[in-house]
Amino acid sequence: MATGKLRHPERFNNDAIRRQLEALEAGTGQTFFQIVMEIFAGHPEIALVPG
Image (cartoon, rainbow, N blue to C red; front, top):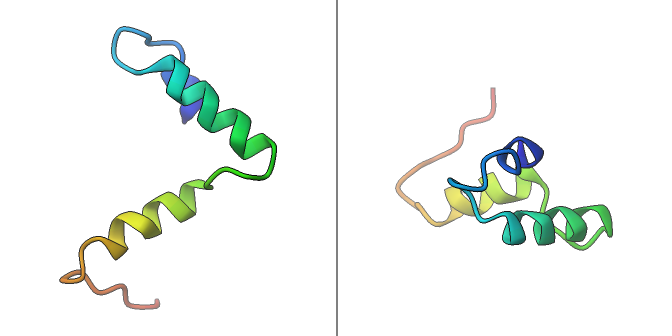
């Protein structure tokens, strides 16, 4: 996902994406799952129901 964004510097902030990838590879960055869960947490009107 993020590496594909690096191919489009006109649409995405490559410096920010590189920092995020470096943090993830160093074990200090957020995973995709963590980012998605953070987004859901910011919308309490949405309930996640286990399948």
